[in-house]
Length: 622
Image (cartoon, rainbow, N blue to C red; front, side):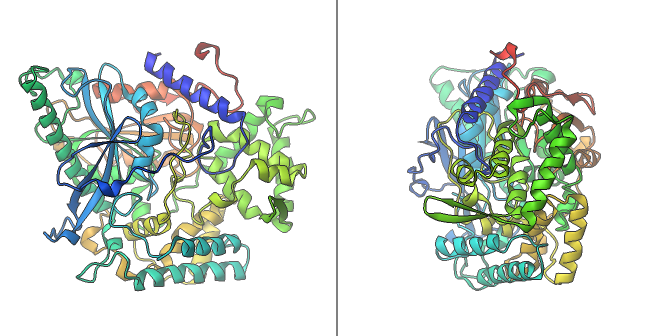
């Protein structure tokens, strides 16, 4: 095992042990050790947006910039309002850019859609850097895609955040879309109102009558990635020139090109994209690779979205392996014995634990529980339990021990203790995105706190996913109920809440949708003849888990067939995405080898994991 991987594994295990000794939590993020938010005093609006990357120190050891890009890449304008200012952040490499061991820049996307790249770098870049570093050392960079968090203009439709909070509360209080006609009617009216609000608001509206929500499609973000690779290359050239002037580094950046298997991921000549995208980030990566195959550097797509289904606004190819997740959960709980809170010595096998749980879940469906805490009354519903379990399925190593403990507290009737230890009520959005935006995938976070969310995530998420997908605003309630039934057949646990994703789009106004020219719906795919032939490009590496709750392995296989020469790496585990949901030295090594040398595993290579939830720390890592 590489020293770097050993180090990041120790970080992973240490953090999990520390958190395991803290209050158990269902919140869809890995809670911080101190349970406080990261310092948010850094003022992004004090950075002057520029057409090149001009970094300023930010947060702890990071560098931030605001990059100006056209509002509409298909119709660029010169007016100030016709530009978007992307919030960009990087963790510098552990060597100078002029050092022969500098490997270049790897761009990350956390998924969503609507996830913050800035937050991903803040919480996980150091651990990700340890995974990818080998003979070469990489800088880790991400940005907030247009419409999200620190990137401006904002996609917000609500004039006050408190108004959005009330909308969310009403949606959560209505319960599940399959609770009955009243619940569906309330949610139907709420999303109808959201669409009307965004249609009528003056927020984000430009002088020509268009609005920012029309320009946040993945096609536009793919163009942003092209520009980003260009300015990264320019910034590298400038840094190298400064080093030469100071008598450091090579006299010619492109002199003495190493052999192909040792080629540095420096974006010389035609700037290339080196990228690791998670979940929805695989749709962005697939879009980029299909639109700009001559710009492919080394791209990993991890937790793969079926791009055809996503573009059709279907969201029907996500839950096929969801049941496998819970087979792992109950089996691993049984194997853990008393370490798992749901275990009982009288149980003969995992099925006994599952049966006991189903009795409780069935009871909760008809008997919501009141929980009194700190002078307030809360209601625990079956719908809330569904969402809690769904969120926990993304990061089993981090969250399953706490999930089991929380359920057991409720089963025993310790409702006050349950709420005191499991403060998940305020944290569940009314729609579960592909990749939770609350930082659940956080195995390498060595910070003492976590970044905050951002208020307008609802509008950002809706504008992106509804704009990327086909227009389904003419669908009726009957159409939607048929859709819910189809998803329930895929997963009785998650199907109803998953259906709420496209419920948003059934009332999304045409005034908020991108023009057809600003949507990419395929064809998806790439040919090797379109790649650069100088050793800097490699076929795409797709990664899928055997029991991913929302991006089944079959998606990785399907998408890989569209990209010539690409390979599929399989991680035999539950959890959403591979390298960030559960420790696997095999997976981490394959990722590092890919970025360092461009080497691909054999297609279908299967990686095992090195630790399971409830496991003690393996001796080799002590």
